[in-house]
Amino acid sequence: MEKYPPDGEKEEGIITLPQFCLVAMVGVTGSGKTTFCRRHFNPIEVLGSDHFRELVADDENSMEASQDAFDVIHIVAGKRLSRRLFTVIDATSIKDFARRGILDIAAECDAPPL
Image (tube, rainbow, N blue to C red; front, side):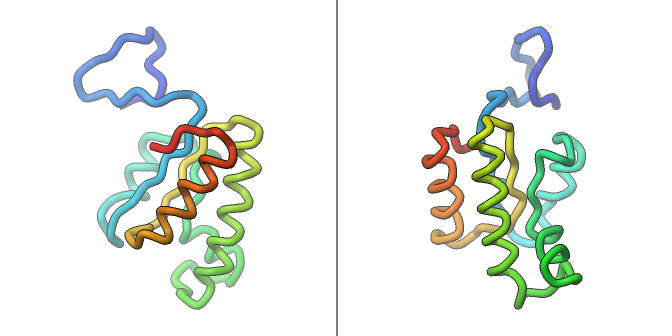
């Protein structure tokens, strides 16, 4: 799987993404979102909720730090997208309000949400 097939041709099993978009990895804990991101995206493109919880609370498992972590993720995503940079949010986001926040960021920056 490649993000941008170099020859522009579509092949079976390859997902072609625009060079500018916001990808939201959504799914239950342990479903493989982070593993998928590690395999297919540049680490600097991925804003992971575990990483941001660790940044704000020194503990990636601190659910009490989730709101602060997501506040920062949204700021960073907005800044990246305002620079037209490919951005991935790796977070559970299974609740409607969480997905709505991600879609709002994409809309504010005219980024296609995927």
